[in-house]
Length: 204
Image (cartoon, rainbow, N blue to C red):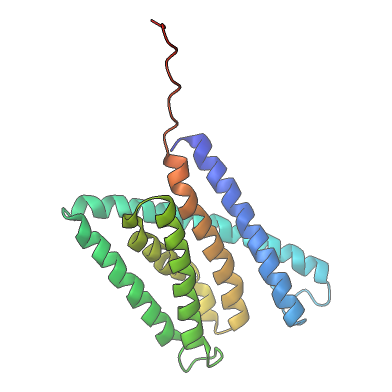
């Protein structure tokens, strides 16, 4: 990981966040014309602009969380002498976070279906990303990817869970998930060493 690759990943991540927020926000605006990122009155164009800017912020925040996870993973692998212990802990935490989401949203200001719909959707989408990661790398990437997509995304979307508004939760959770999925699926490609060119026959 050099500076050029890091800057490229950072730039594409915040752009992904802006695009995902724009698509999510416009979809929500079509379903509910009163949806606003900030109080902008009837100025829908300014509201759309604020959606995109909020998405850029989500992308930057997701990038910070990504490198925080990489650092945590590096430290944990040096602490746990047996790798399967760290993998098992990540699996346990991922399940625990899904249960906690159900607990946070049950009998709250969120719609009644939120307490099971959000954990189920997050688990299914995270499993899909994990399957994709395993397909492109190794089977050992399944649990760490699932942990990252569930636990780290939930931590980053905490303000949305605390808002008590389903619109705020969806608007923050979806772009963060997209950014995190993009980063974890790009990581092995970034770290992949380029193949050395074959030596020409007869060269000294």
